[in-house]
Image (cartoon, rainbow, N blue to C red; front, side, top):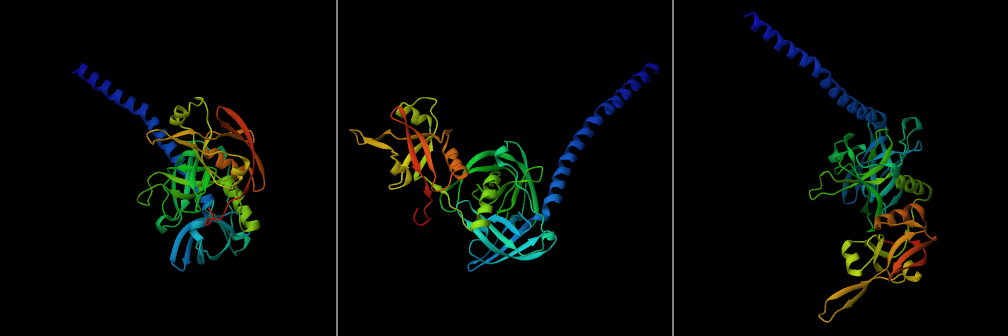
Length: 359
């Protein structure tokens, strides 16, 4: 009986020791989770006064979206598709303040717009822009907006990828877009995507979904582009972009094999040169296709742009981003082009993008 008592005491002591050993570990996990949630809540409390819900009336009906204040003059950034065609814009702040918004400028190429409200400066708490070029895959992010009309909603996620290319409203591409798995739904459009310092690193714009609801693949217009475009809209009311007059794609393994290209060759494969455009005038050559004896078309060659102004290109996204970030209409850029086994240099004088109807 004495031995049994010792055995029971040993078991009870082991259980107690186990509880003592494991309890702090469980406590640390909970504290870590609480800490993360606390920071998200802190960011929301810090920035939510600058986020707005936008309700739009149009001749065709109406719509709803989001936006955020960028200065104490009442300027608000949102998406072009949220306010384009508006006959009346209602802007609501989280404290219940309502104001009428007026359009300052629209840019369908980037799907960005700036509107303005007439409120005292002390009522406005602008957000600051972060550096979207410094983002990394896996970085935590926060989206705030009004999905499905549910105002001032916070969702969280990570940067799923950077340097994506998405379509603007005119068919031209937007470079350096941010992909995120933070839940973005209709109504989030125009709202901010923020880092954990409460800085805007993107403007929520698009989702990839067959059902028009969140599928974990959302896209935001990068803050570096947004900052530049919004200031141009405030200053001039419009934005002009550089135009090269080509269509292109990335170098693929199939192309390397078909054209016997160097295995390490990377750049932009020119798939079309617009007749009379800047690149055509500079001597850019598009695909050369030959038909064999069986009537089968075979690609014989095409220009491959490997660098612009000495900046090496690895993809079409690189070229799109460089043109938007580093150039303006009227600039002349130097292209390094791989053609028929050697490099040639072309000087292309950029022009403004043609209108949507012209393009």
